[in-house]
Image 1 (tube, rainbow, N blue to C red):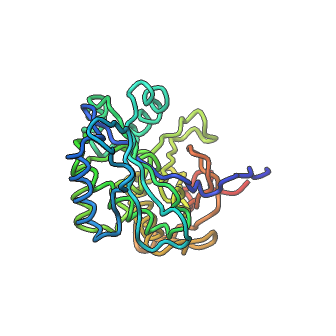
Image 2 (image 1 turned 90 degrees about the vertical axis):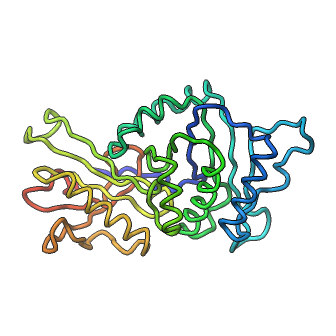
Image 3 (image 1 turned 30 degrees about the vertical axis):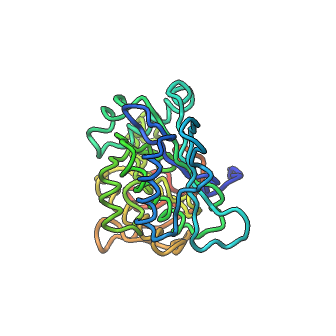
Length: 301
């Protein structure tokens, strides 16, 4: 079998962003909002992040549907600094483009009971996305993004955050609290563990099989993980994926095909294989093989 050729093997995103789901429209032209945003950013980042002056209306009568935040930290190349843009998106435009994506995110946010209710009660959307960040270290990219997001969430009444790169909905209060506790961590938001049941009619044995994977690591230029298994507790498999995913975020690409990682028990060693994701988006993954009799379809064709 010929392996597919992936134009973007890891799934690295040129622009990394989230949607803020709000119950009511947010007036980005409000000078009071912009003042609070500028002060919150300055305090949170010690001058590393700031609201760009050009985004502030020239007079009270001007209107703006976007604000720009500039990064003034360690920039590797000269020219325009990396930035983030907060943009208001009309509900009808948002529904036409991402209704299916929101539905999928709700399904993969099973750990947050209020996810669906919060999303359905929040018809107004805003997009916060970064630009010109590919030259920066992936950890710096996510940490800086979370700095901006946390500041925005303290000033904008968002009911939920649709984290696009990791396909999940996250409670804004949890993001702010977690960021204050540990600004360097990828959670919550940056990494998701997804769960899928495989229809027994689609398996050779007819047994119930499952696929679990991570989403969010590849978007930053690392690699996501996947496990296709049967006969194991999904919660235990999820813990392996989450633990290994956080380890990759902390250490980089230190697990490669042919290496092994610890399974649910200290004596368990799961072999890492190179594979292609079974669930969208299309990307390469590290398949964690739990071994006989638990592995399902991990052998290379």
